[in-house]
Every structure is written in C-alpha cells, then in structure tokens.
Length: 274
Image (tube, rainbow, N blue to C red; front, side):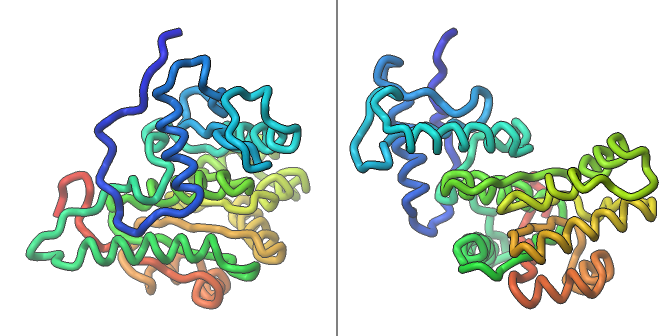
C-alpha cells in the first residue's frame, strides 16, 4: 500500500499555545514523514493518526516492539477508543488545538478571533478541570465549527488515555430504537455503554427524539453521566442561552451553569455565510 504523507495545507493555529498532547501530535507528524521502517504503527487507518512516538518510560522508541508492555497496552486502548470515537471522515485531519483555523474578522464581527480563542480556552479548561465539571454547551448558527471543536476535544481526551466518543443525537436515538423496539424499559447495557465514556459529545442536540420512550431514556443516560461525574458536551444550532434552556429543560441548563458553561459561537460561518 502506498504511504501518504499528512497534508501540508494545515489550517493556521488558533494561537493558544501547545501542551504535551499537541507536542505528541506534532512529533507524530514528523515521524510519519520518516521511512516506514522507522515508524511506529498508527492507531487506525483512515482516522487522524495516533502513534506511540515515545515509550512511557521516557525513552524514544523507533519500533513498536521496543516499547514496554504498559505503553503497548496504552497504545491498544487508544486504538480501540479512536475506532469507536464516532468522528466522521471530514473531521479527522485536525486533532490538536493549535491546528484549528480561526474565523475571518469582518466589520460586522471585529472580535471574531478573540471570541473563538476564548471558546477554545473554555473547552480546554472544561477538559482539564478536576472532577466535578459535567456539562458544557456549544450553541450558535450552523457552520461556526462547533462539531470540529468537539472532535478535537475527543481526540485530546484519547491522547490523555481517556475514553471519548461523539454521536449525532438522532443517530444515538436510532440505535436505541433498533435495539429495543421503541417502547418498554431500556436495557441497562445501553445505558451503561453511553454512561461509561469519560467524554461524550452529542451533536445536533436540537434534533431530539419525538417519542416519550426515547426522550426519557436520553434523560436517564445524561443523568447517569452527571451522577458519575462524566464530561458531556451538548452541541445545538440555537441562537442563545435562553433558546438552549427551552430545548434541554431546567435541569440540564442549571447543570451547564453550575459546572461547565454555555459557549455561544456567534462568529462568522466557516462556510462563507456572514
């Protein structure tokens, strides 16, 4: 199979500095341009590569066989979590905060870049807080990069050896209906599956289920994540915090204010709309 080098036309950095995970990613990009014999295997083909570039013992490793068993187990976990992450192909090329493109500032949006950088900083703080932060909301018009922000959050969590997943809400509810027929009590296995990940990003949350069973089960799952102190990011195409509160109800809205926040992505669309 012909090797492909990472794309060279990466977006401009978001200007918020780099952390150990970002350096790990950039080291991986450098290593991926080396001959195959000197490269460690990527975690998965077709997704943004997550390679074991340094053994946890603190020594550089040029071959996977040189890594200790502990580091190989970490690599296997990251590979599995990456494959199950639910990140779609169009969002796999960017997995590090500094690689995010910034919105274009216009006379109508003179503070677009500052708002975008503040949003990135809030998400990073949400992921780095001690246990207790539970719900964060990303809201705003379509095309403002909310999904890409959540995908980077998923990748960064996996880089830190934490299970992270994302799903469109309608797909999650379709899976529930397929597995349980649309009525009755949900099997505990489904609830445990989605309560387990350290981070869960639910996109298109305005497309909530129409049936009572699906709505109640979704709320049970979110409440279970709250009780277990798991991180949850809800993404919705609504214009402001008031509309979001009407969508999710007072319980989730209060939890966002208590231990997470609501980020309004009101900068210009990356798709060209103003």
